[in-house]
Length: 270
Image (cartoon, rainbow, N blue to C red):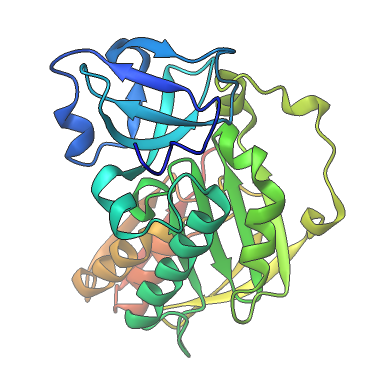
């Protein structure tokens, strides 16, 4: 309440009774069926910062609003967190910087990038508490995948922050057109700015295996979130015959071969 006092016109999304605990427990997606009413005139627009309150109108946190999506608010910070870190409360730019720095520190603590792996997921949407945002690092290229209206709104800030990550020299922005339609955005009307124009392929290494990643491929171009699964397959494959069905990059087949499989078959279905 104190932090919001100086924000004139800040809308309040009031939840139905009995719908609060799931969000206090960490779910960031406030679905429209959980909302009782919205207090604020004029009503908030897509991308606006709003307070989220319980049935007694007491704030439990804040997030970004969407007037069209079934997820009408993506919670960014709970009340207790805002009290501990008032500088980032109700401040998307500051929060983005803090969350990105935390994600970088976490990956560095896990050893990424390393001499045998320079392809990894830097931002994992809800996993890094930035719902709707994915950032994969492929050598010196950062691929940013957007699937939320708020991500498109803060595109310039996100690109600027990601460009400062060590070793990143190029950025490719990829908007999930079909999902963003459900968020109320028609991406066919959007123009691709120069900073996102990186195209072609980039050579990367994962667990000692070299891949060519297409910037126009599925998702971000490579399923970086399957690294541990591919490594696990390699530990099971010695002296085995392995079929990699519906393979995309061939990562599971290559990992099986590295693990000592006697026969490996990869099938690509279109």
